[in-house]
Length: 284
Image 1 (spheres, rainbow, N blue to C red):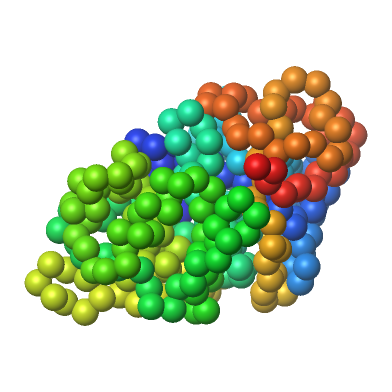
Image 2 (cartoon, rainbow, N blue to C red):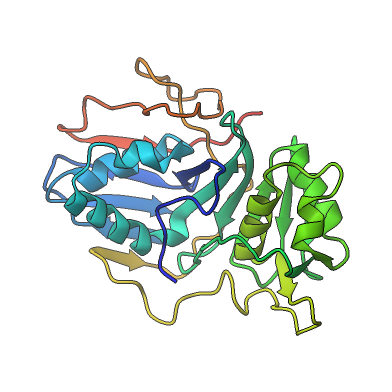
């Protein structure tokens, strides 16, 4: 399964760079650099498209349609290759229809892959036995020892799904349960792809364990124009960033605010001369 740039459901999905990433965007035609503890990524950017896309992702969670708006088919293909190359540095968030982050899947390794897909209604799902839930500020974090992602649960709706997953339950029963959010099917897709949920068929077939199907490292590095140095980037303790509101030049330390649906993101007029960007933690 290849990395998809389209949502897995009708619910908004947001993309951003991991919060410990620092980005250097030089003048067009020069190498773009991504840095985080233990990882350095060098990206050829002859047209400047890669630098602009990464800069907008560095501002915090944003709809991918806003990043791809106005690009040619060739440029979109360039972004597809880029995201495949740096997939282990991308934070994927599921949002409510109003644009508030519901949960975020944060990669813990440059080799992490995240490919969410809706599950069949008859599929049985259950929280992984090794998954542990802990409180972190106003959010909760779900993590398993063998998984290459951790999941930050921002809203109570996501926690309701976790409670329903304490025992093996069919997907159809969870989505129809009293108190389950309308986005339950999409939440299950994200939790399963992150390795927090094991799955089995209704006839009792063995469940898929954490690391056996989802969240595992690829056998070979994906093709791309990047040079990746280092094997494991580690993880920060903060939540994923939230992009700035459009308009004006934001201060270096801004309060995090949820992305508004359909907003186009902030453009940096200094990109042609060289710019830098650094993510900041989510403020609740």
